[in-house]
Length: 340
Image 1: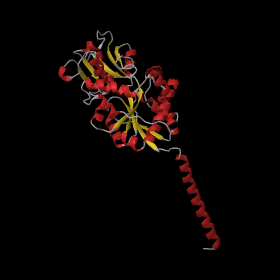
Image 2 (image 1 turned 120 degrees about the horizontal axis):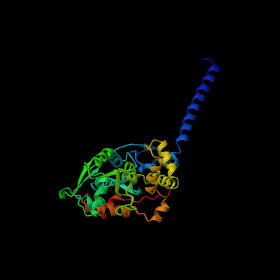
Image 3 (image 1 turned 45 degrees about the horizontal axis):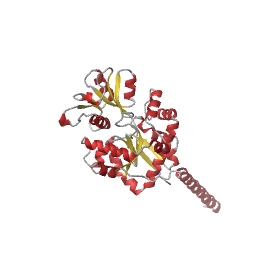
Image 4 (image 1 turned 180 degrees about the vertical axis):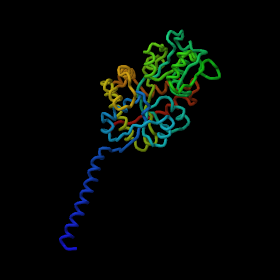
């Protein structure tokens, strides 16, 4: 090998190494904006309850806070297990994790997310108009122990109807498919159905049913959060800034939704996060859930801890929770410092 060829070969190798190094550096620059890397958030369930997550992703709010977020679907058990192990940092849910937390699963609530989203329907023209009218009746829910079951149980108990199985004052029947529950209602096989939106409102607007309880407006629930942000206690305690950054992104999205409900629905539909056949209805529901800025929440007097105390006491009264409400809320709720 002559000297000139050696020089050429050395230069070629050096050039190739520079290209590779440059590419790597380019990749580092490309991903350096993600301070917290990639995280999965199990928030896809087809409902509009998760719209702040959809908006936070599509409007770049998660990215602004240092995340490459992947929104995924997962059932309740998977989410609960993922949060407890630290696989997932955060998700949204309602009362369904309360019993698991009471039994020692290390999950925390750090914020509320919206009000509303469940209605109790009866057949159009039914004589059933209030809670006490359902004594001795059959009520469809999606699952025993699920949120519609709990919400109706609270409402009935305040209305003087016992929901304890041993008292036999009301019978709950599980229908995993809300459409089947509504079909049973139409055929007279049940007397009422607790249904998630948007199906509940859509069916009401069809003229086939009357609404006798709406979680968004009924005095038992009115103005109180029904859905909350749950986080992994493991991640919260090991890396609180990570949870704080996620919350800041979600709060940005909530404030944006309050000012742009129609665009928020467009983002949800275009991203195929939820099947939206009636945009006007979806916008109506998003407005009814009252997504607001943090400043507006304070003006409205919303208090997550107070709402949790209220609901835990009611759930304790009907036997769903055994722990004293004050202690339960102490175990359940944790404040997060959102300052950078």
